[in-house]
Image (cartoon, rainbow, N blue to C red; front, top):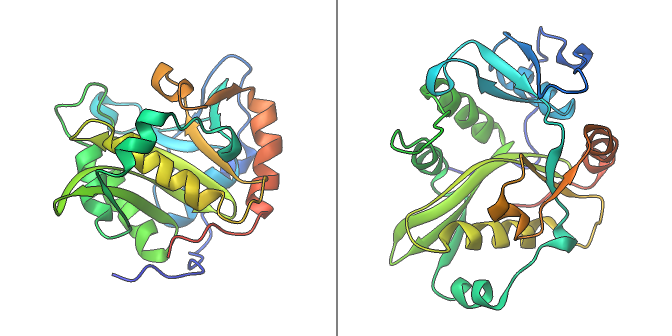
Length: 228
C-alpha cells in the first residue's frame, strides 16, 4: 500500500490525555481510554505512550511517561565498524511489510511480550493514515529484522524491534537514523522509551522527563521525516 504523505489527521480523541500529570517517581501516568488513532496521537504529542497493564500487555490500557526517558539524538548515534560492515549484508525497505514487522515484534515466545492483537490493529490503522512506519531489514527476499514506530513532525517514537539474524535490528536502527537526520535538522529525536544496555551502546541517553517534554515540543515543530 502507499502510505499517505502528509499523514491524515484523524478525528480528535474524546479523552484529554494531555491533562494527565505524572508523579515524580512513577512511569505510569494513567489507565483506561482507548486506542483510536486520535487518542494515540494525542498521547504521543503529550509525551505518553500506551502499554497494557494486564498479562502479556492486555487491558486495562496504561499510559506511560518514563522517568528517565530513553532518547537517541541522531547526531549521537554510534555506528561502529562492525555495524557498517553488517549493513552490506542486508537490504533496507520502508513500509513494505508493516503488519508483518509488528507481528514479529509480538512473537509470543519473546520475553516480556506486551503487543496484543488490539495494539497490532491500532498501529495498523495509524499506518494506513500515514503516522506509523516500519523500517525493515531483508536478506535474500526474507524479512529478517526491523522496527516500527510513530512519526509526528521531527519525532520518531520507536515501539519495538526484532531480529531473526544477527545485527538485523541494529541495521534497521541505523537506517532509521539516516532518515531522521537526512536534512541535518538537529531538533529531531528518536524516542526509545526505556534505555537498555544494548541501546546505550548505540548512543541512547537517559533524559529526565522534564528535559524530554521540553525537547518534545521542539521536535514536533520540526519538518516531518520523509519515509518515501
